[in-house]
Image 1 (cartoon, rainbow, N blue to C red):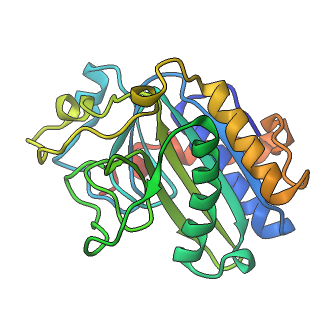
Image 2 (image 1 turned 45 degrees about the horizontal axis):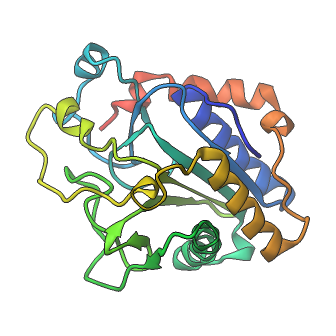
Length: 250
């Protein structure tokens, strides 16, 4: 499914409803999308109080939202965001889910001519802290010249799991420093697609991922409009992602 740019709460609500749909029907759903404005997002269990604030975000006209998946803070702007919702039976473990989806994304990036690779194990997976999402790659994440190119996070329930992430077209992560109330750890700039392919577009990445999906699954996973997602379910979920008690709960 390819979505038009949406606000933060709607994007997260659509992802949550996809998770419920995968659990109820056993379907695999894929969505590729953008954001209607630069947006700060926090991981499901990340502490953001005293590090960021709704007042600072409002002053800089950058909305904030808390994702249904884990991970750390990142700035969504010039990127391709992907979301996959699938039954847990297809990938019974967290690592298995990451590996299957990263294999697909790696195929897509290589179709574009990007020499992306998987990061090698370099220690324990970072816990949600002050450092931004693109600080350093975890084992198996997709990198370019050793720098993180795709930031991903996952949430698993009994019958289905949700994974989504950001494929950077350009680097907007420096804005996190302006949004933070405290100094953030110094991190190297992330990799971006346009550093390798200056003219690559959102549509180019969508086409490459579509081709990779069809190579792996034939026509079983068509990418269509998000109109197939029940709007009443989205409306119900959206109210939570608009609620400051959810976004700023930690």
